[in-house]
Image (cartoon, rainbow, N blue to C red; front, side, top):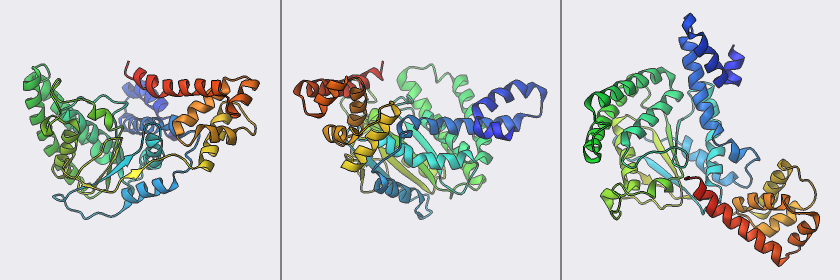
Length: 365
């Protein structure tokens, strides 16, 4: 039913897949798959935003203004790039989640009046350095979610290119041959995708490309054991890919948000780099609000949230650690910690270090 499609699209996909053999459900299945895919993108940020987002109104307003401001419709012109920066644990991905989730909700509901949003999160999805074809595939896949009229044609185009790749054997060649062949396939795919986008009248629709955790892409060199140079720098390669896709794929109203700890420069790619939106520590009141919500979610109520926030500081990740650390203390240990006991401070510092370092390490295992 329509209610199941809206409330639980993944369930609708399962049911319609079972019923497909009966005939007459192809369109409903396609719509359920589209909704489910968008819902999955949105829910990827739920763990970061479910306790609320505090003290980030100015940053979110700057991001929304960037996403919605009118741009000169010029395929040959440079696209704007807005860096979102901050130290580890400052909450860059949380701010991005609060920023993109309302747009994704509109896309899931079929609202075509807002920007088409494409999210590439390099902390969650593995894109190999140099894998421009994979990136172009994912870009068109998510464009299809926002513009279903062209989505099916783009899906058929991807299938056609994958078949060509298998038939040519380029997916099995050694790295240098595979790289050259993949670049040719990517260029041909992007030109064909651009023709479809123009043909469906979508070239002027605003497209918001969000690169989350961009520093993960910058960790690798394209060629191992070779120092980074302009030709061996993944950051330059991906921004060059965007610069090429901008005119070739007819993304005239493209704008890009890049979140990470790495600096961007005008010489990279072809974008016009805007002044960064910097995510810093929370102010005292926002830190207290966040900690109250974190403690409440853990089943802890009482007057200690303000004192605990004052002890932990304004870094959101540190506040998350503080809430879990506090939960594990006895009543006397809580009293000592809030009073500034040195042994409690040492234990808290150790747990914070583990969360920052070992937690990040484990994400790669």
